[in-house]
Length: 131
Image (cartoon, rainbow, N blue to C red; front, side, top):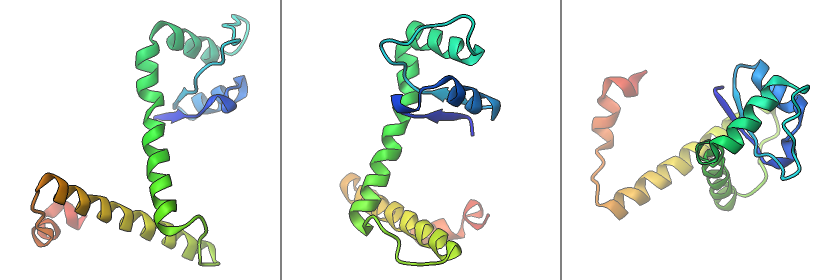
């Protein structure tokens, strides 16, 4: 994990420190009443300065979250909110299959919209597809 984006509800010294301890950068926007607090956690100070001094750059990273939220919404709309399987292993497989089906549906839709021919057989024969 390189980055973590979360909404303001996740903003706390502890959360920022936990993410930083994992070696990731926490992109959680600061609330209007947030203070830099020089005696607080180092990561809090660093991210607070980055948020206010480089707001546009911070928001580029933070808004990657909206892409994920959109994909989750699309999958839930297509397949529903609940898994049908009972065991953990089958639930993991069900989620993976939903993701695969979603990705294929988006690929096909975009190929029609953009007029791109996709040769699935050729793609399957390529070396990188075999890994």
